[in-house]
Image 1 (cartoon, rainbow, N blue to C red):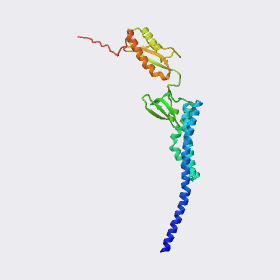
Image 2 (image 1 turned 30 degrees about the horizontal axis):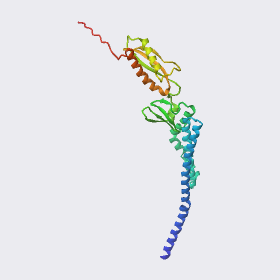
Image 3 (image 1 turned 90 degrees about the vertical axis):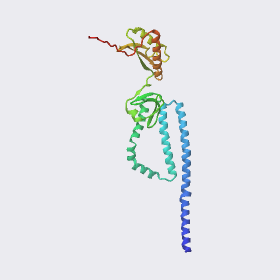
Image 4 (image 1 turned 120 degrees about the vertical axis):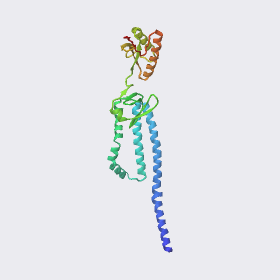
Amino acid sequence: MENNTTSTWDSFAIGAKQFLNDVLFQYVPRLILACIVLFVGWKLINLLNKVMKKAYDRHQVDPSLQQFLHSVIDIVLKVLLVLTAMGIMGIQMTSFIAILGAAGVAIGMGLQGTLQNFAGGVIILLLKPFRVGDYIEQGSYAGYVESIQIFNTTLRTYDARKIIVPNTELATKSLVNHFNLPQRRVAIDVGLAYGMSVEKAKEVMVRVAAENPYVLNEPKAPFATLENFGDSSLNMRLYAWTLPENYWNTIFTLNEGIYNAFRKEGLEIPFNQMDVHIRNEA
């Protein structure tokens, strides 16, 4: 009985020693070293990103390209860091790569849309249909471009909503860039009552535009026209040029200025009306 107890104890001691040798003395130091590498590496990658950001600004690299490069480099370096830590822990990279290769087809099918978005981001940066800060419209999306990332582009609407659009949508479909050219034309429609002087109305509209601080004289000075004859009014239109970022302020101030000037000059802006003639056949 005593021999059996001694034998069991010896087996336990040998197993404990083996466990300490395999786990505590071999695996734990590797785990600690891997954690240190991860921590230090993560800090160094973040520091590198800050240094590169200053370099981009110093060399005046396009903001759209800055964001894209930042995203790509950050992801690639962090993936390499994780693989390095796994190697330190003793995980065989050949086996890991073999597993990834075996799952490559399935992963490729699952990430097909993601890869298309990545390709769309590259196309956007190469062709530059828009830049950070531009106001664009594409389908039901419209807003200022805040950032161009690896897989998507972020838009900010006028009412401060954020829209995240897949890059493939913006790279493969038609869109409108309102900031692509240095000037943008505005058109202000005004109704003028029948019987009023068209020439006087045109003179007043052009004067209001000339006094507006947002209106430009290039590429063409403001001018007004009689567009057509409406059911209840003469439909006038004012054309003027402004900077893209002043588009809405130009429209709002011109509308208000024309209304006040018409009232001051005695020019009537009619409301919709209908003349009814009653015939008495008795």
